[in-house]
Amino acid sequence: MDATSTVSAVDYSDAPPVLISGSSDICLMRATRSVRALGLRVGDAIPIEEAESRLSRQAAASAVWIELDGQMTEPMRRTLAALNRDTADGRYAGIVSATPSLVDDLFGALDDQVHLLIDASDAERASALSLALALQGERHRAADVASDGSAERLRQLSDEVSRIAATLARLSTGPSAVVLPPRVEQGAHAGEVSLEVVRKVIRARRLRARYFREDLFADPAWDMLLDLLQAEISHLRVPVSSLCIAAAVPATTALRWLKTMVKEGLFVRRSDPHDGRRVFVELAPQTSGALRSYFAEVGNAGVL
Image (cartoon, rainbow, N blue to C red):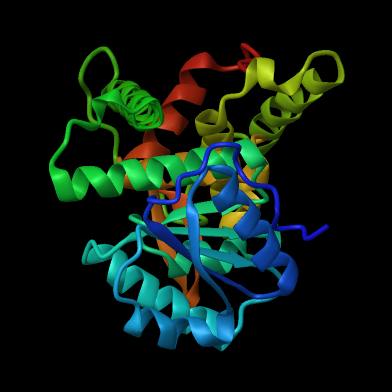
């Protein structure tokens, strides 16, 4: 049986088509299955080498789904640049699904309006496509997207990160509203927060997984904050893929949090000086100051 024949029981023959492109036959089959499972029509499924040219000629599509594996290639980069351009212009919704090996390249290459999935489950894939189409429809119809549960969840995510930002801001000023100095440069006062203390907190958080399900304690924002503080004290740069692992949640979820933390000003993206296409992540100065103030205040309380 053809791997692409898993189709929704409901025939949505009038649904707008989705254009699919993939870097391998397996990618094309998986993307096709995801689109059809949602009851949508596949306009075409083409190799990634043909995608850039096809996008320039594409008359209409509700969405473009790009499925990638392997390593980043020049045809992929050109296609992603075209996807950024077209989604920014509102021509269609854009979804990119990929294997973990591509997370660093994709985070630096894609604009925020493109939905990025990494090693996603079938449920995550269906949710991302539904949300992308809902937001695209809202963009054209100026409809109230508040009725869309997935969009509401993203807003809740943004609200939660805003709450964390506000908490960190309060920690920065402290009860007496004394403003902390900006983040200390490398080598100046790295000992003001013990690297071993931060590492012990991280190890203790991971140790819980031996006794309880990890999802009971999922807190990607805090885990990423701790990892970046550890890296800052150690004078290390953190790539996106490493930070996603530190978040201890599925990569797609971690990327969603990461983008929101950058948007809220808690994290800063830095291009690799040796390869402008690669991105590192670090703490914003005020975030670093807040975390250092926090650890100084709690002392040896063993905070998790």
